[in-house]
Image 1: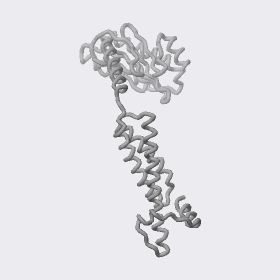
Image 2: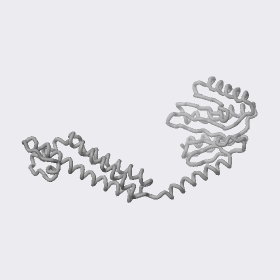
Image 3: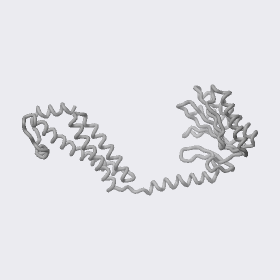
Image 4: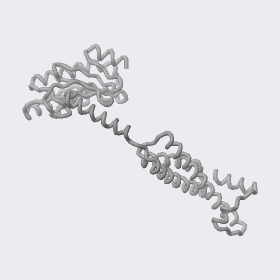
Length: 281
């Protein structure tokens, strides 16, 4: 990041380190350079508008020709009627980004002057003075009015989130549904001889997600409630799994028990317990 900072400063650009975006205003036009470090790419863009459709087509053709002449470095270049975008790709990103950015800015300004383009706000589309603003972890060019509107929306969204009240009763309903699903899974996994701890993890996750969904938000108290409810239902599921296992176990000796009778019967024979444990591993 320090390398990018030095390189951008050397060509008059600022750098927002959080979004890895370079920015600069040149003769009233706001340039941004968005860097994708993982893909070793960066895109230079500037919002502007020309007066005639023919000029827009000619400008787009000029930038496509610009990209064709630099196939090794320029992945794409175009003008879409509202913004010029030039995308570079380089294996040596930290070495070539300064030269590529300078080249892109020079090319943009050349064609902007040639076709008498004017700066526009990419948000509202008006031909108006713009600046670079950081709004909600993003750096963009926009006019002052759009910046104020964006700030107001962020503020309203934050206030709405703060005003949201946790609906504990509905959250408990969600946790019960998640716990019930976990109990059923525990019984099924036990009967199939699978590792039942997976059912426990799924039950806790389902209880948490359904609590949060129905309660609209989740606090520490809600998290504890959802986990306790999931644990209780897992105990119930374990109890039923043991009852079913007892039914199947005594059936081998010709004894037939109902589920209710099996639930009231707790096997104490150590050999039986060992056999059951082996089947569940």
